[in-house]
Image 1 (cartoon, one colour):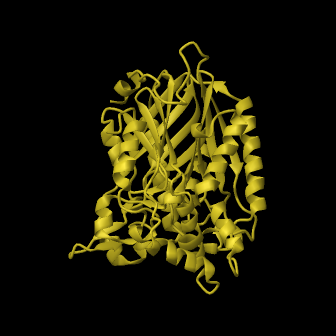
Image 2: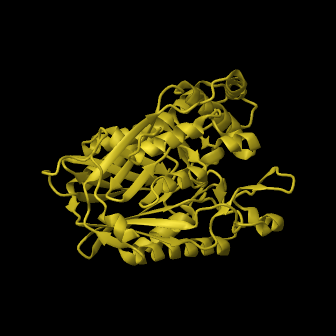
Image 3: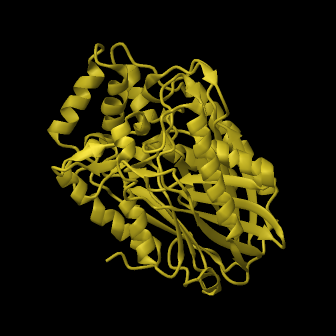
Length: 453
């Protein structure tokens, strides 16, 4: 099937930001990497102060050029990047590469021993009594400056590629469904270290996407960069004062050292998928997850089939998602920010970050996609449930469709309508009202070249 996919011709470039005409130069690629690890003492998720750096947090990506236009696909070893912070990181890379912000995608890998950033929320916290801590502005500004230099240097190293390949393979005993149902039909939440509870570990693996997808850019027989996509929360430990890329980063970097080929890892639609069935947070178990994920990457590479690249087609879609602005949502958020006795983590995540999303409620989320022949990469915001990834794949049943979640996380969780009816943790943690499912699915259809109707 993959050979047939790779023989398909790209559709006509219909959207702003699509690749240039057939008379332009051939496609080129460059890679870049930037250390995004905060200094010790900076603030990580849930206000944990960084004490120990176990392994670096990286921002890795590729610059693609075709027909005089440039596009960036990147992944950051952070938990969340929200609202204006996400915009500013894309704007930084766009200026450095000489392109538009809408031609840049950045996605968090979503480790929970890492920071999150929302600078609009930071300003609210600074104005609040007894302000909770957050990432410092100096660190964020310095990081963006280093990132700009990394992208500028990458543009100078752009080199031709003449083959693009895709492959997929099953990953064994890593992902598991988080939203399980008990005998009474009520939702049971299997957390990321659910294997500590024998009853949760014994429950079925549930609804997951077992397949890891890999896209490889190559010149002749030389692989230049690989992009990997797999859907699970990458969280095996949380809030212990350490910084780590966790088992997904371990697998990515181990494979890069082994192959000497640049590797980027993207987390798919994992809002309701974790490693909870297989993780008890002990180091041997976490290393086992790393080994099995790396095995899936290597199997997908082995299954890769190549063809000459078609023209790059970049599509952008702006979507206003239904962020909650009702009094029952906004009132407690404001009260939490204003109360110096409230738990610090709640003042940030359930307070200021929610209010920052309320302030941008009418500003659209900027979604994008890349198509190369029969290969598609869809870039989604927030923490989308797995159903959106499967919908994207069903929408192009004959093509190779990879999906990255955790773009602009101002939405927090993106839930299905059915999930709103059922309840559960995700509904407590989302910033959206019901109605987002149809809007996001229509956008996915447009990003895949359909009408969105």
